[in-house]
Length: 476
Ligand code: GBH
Image (cartoon, rainbow, N blue to C red; front, side, top):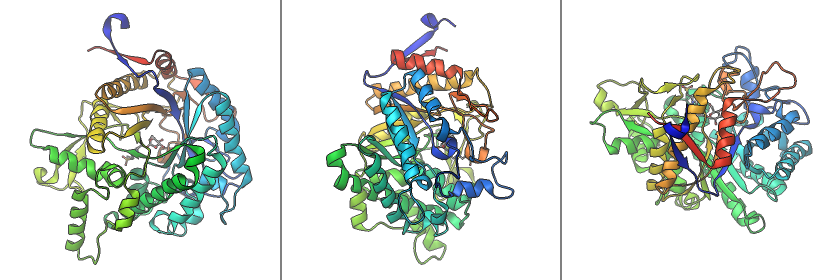
């Protein structure tokens, strides 16, 4: 393919930062060494007949606890300037909330090595590995957890804040709150009626985020001068036909993204009004004494409002939407009463939920710009899955080219996107899909004791993008 003739070129700003992302439980292994205490993912993956499709666990995974130098080399070979990784709560604090020095030492070493290679560490505090003892107290449905999280954040700022300047409190609460506490397909695998558990979880996540944000501003910012944000995931909702209105689109966006983003980034703060009203009404109709969606106090609304220095965004895929009222039947019991589905023409990955809709990223970024007063955005995950050991990963190369082009167009149209970290640096433990679906730009054979990081074709693409600061996309 001769790009000189058949390609369009999409540029990026000269100060744009490129990198890759990972998460502790998915890569580290070493699940029971050096004082690490059990997490809810150890519990979920170790139990008899676990829901992990291939019966696998993250006990060893990519062994990054031992082989982090291989990850750093992989980042270096591409020329990436940032690495988004997560810290395992169960590694750095004991059950009595004392520091576990071995855990601190591990991350300290990793951070120092990254800095020596001029790779900025971007740290996610919570990428789903909750200490099991906290789940035994109710986990994210218990308001007491806010204080535990605030103390954990304090520990991280204190030990690493001299070197880490970009903090993400939570990764994708939309995934783990409803997955973990409403539908039960995610650790801790709790099912509750009508999303009661999921709404409690998101409420406490927001309060915990606010506590960690203000702690940083009050106690650390003067010295450390870093930024704190939260990582939210969503697709864009495209009208399925001409009868679906902008109001339906906004409703779908508010029930998905707005549930987490409005309290922090919107002009007025608090939950989206459409959500508040719908769930309050349904709760009354269901004969409940109070709403399934908890209320913030006025002080909490004010404290959360504006409590972020950037929005970290994970974008994978999008949907077509149609309100139930147009369908004449109820496809699911959901408070939004919006049905979402995929266009048959969208390219499919190895994950059932993931189809390629680059146009969705463009529209999502503009929706965020228009609804949240054009916040600073980091794209902290975007990626494609295929089968194990697909080194010629042309599907991923094409997906990445098209999504980078969409991001470039959004920047040209005024969106403030300044960083992109691809998901993922290496193949890893893909939660309930185990090792059956692979997102890495480096392949790993998980029976290889050395866990060699093997570059896929997408590594060459990312090298070119980092070098030239543009991406080429084939013309139709
Ligand atoms: C991210 O979630 C995670 O942050 C990351 O850890 C993960 O490895 C990566 O994506 C790839 O999955 O099974 O049909 O009910 C992505 C968003 C939302 C994807 C929930 C899976 C479940 C769909 N996730 N979704 S389904």
